[in-house]
Length: 149
Image (tube, rainbow, N blue to C red):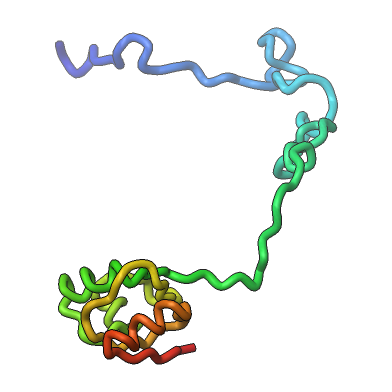
């Protein structure tokens, strides 16, 4: 093998389609774009979700339910979990900052304490919301609750 007889592997190269170069080429006239219509014109672009006259999918499928734009989402902690978390992360104050530092919540999460389970350790809470049952259990254990907005 020499430099003068090198060539690409079989099937590695393809001839370019020469469109619009006369009827004899078989790809003259309409240049394989069919007859007339927007799609045969230069600069054609279809609108998103356009289905050619058929009813678009976003109009065929019925809407369901209701999304309240004023809903407040909370990251929920039950009293049963809090003892384990306090022991695992050595938490003395259950506040948004300590939870964020320990990777338990995202930076802008709202936190709510619910009363499922028992609280044995004395902790101070600085959270966004607390249920009545949880508040009574926290104060019975000797802790305090502060609501932060």
